[in-house]
Image (cartoon, rainbow over all chains, first blue to last red; front, side, top):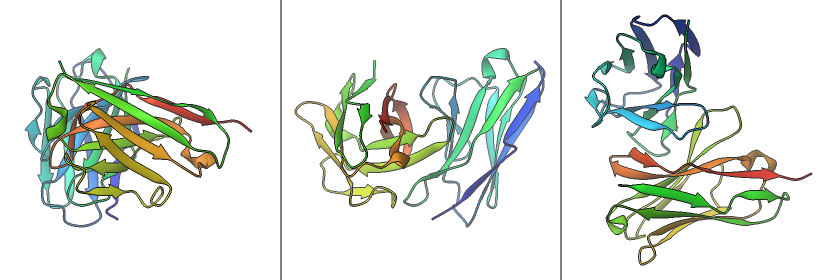
Length: 107
Length: 118
């Protein structure tokens, strides 16, 4: 199975900060990575697919990038409503696997 | 608008069976692949199973293969997860999710909780 190692596991940042979350795949997966946001008590919400493409309706403050087996989710201009846990997911091959999650808190 | 509503969760005893349902509306259910994804309390997301739009193919996580069966009834816009030989480690919120293409899950239900009695 492909392992997705996500870091950090948690972070605390201020409103207006730029936040970066990274996922490293255990093997080459091209750009087959999706990013989800999950707020407490809610279902996950698709933010980015194909490593870099913003899902319809998602604010442009979210962006994704890829370099080899490293994938990054960036939140620019962090807002209070961005407080959530973020997960990466590889969609390259079954079984589809998720990173462990990154909890983003607002200072 | 797209809606997915899960039901069927509850408290069960280890070794017993349970059937979860996911009723879809707001889109042409019969044309989409569908997934089950679960989340143990306080833990991350774990993909469980996927079914092709026409039921021609089904795939499972190793942790549930042989115990769980995914199915669908396109005439009822409903997805199912039949869970047999349940174990304590199956305790989780179970979500159904629509596959937008390429295993990207664009709509999720609110989840249904499966827990165990001692």
